[in-house]
Image (cartoon, rainbow, N blue to C red):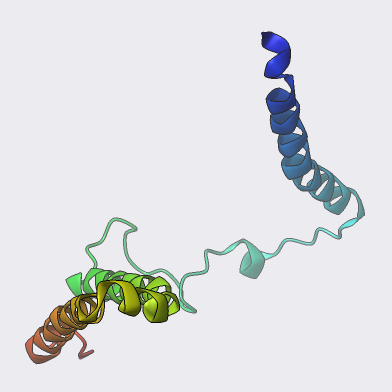
Length: 126
């Protein structure tokens, strides 16, 4: 019975070797052949183009998180629209207008949420 699992084990081993070998070989080759001339600029922390001047544990403005959540929301909206648009012609014949109206309702809810966020000023940068 274990011989049935051998191809799976072989696949995992080959995948791990194929994934890790370039990392290990590339790192080793670059260490051997690369030029290492560290200076203060190369060793300094880089953060958004300017020098870090506060503690790393400082509080961030909530708007950064809000914009990230809005991006994820509208990115998922697009992810739902692609499969729907692909099968629109086939499903409209089978289910009728319900298929189209359900997506119109989905988009209407998202548009109302977008307008609400816009009116609240979530998209404004001071």
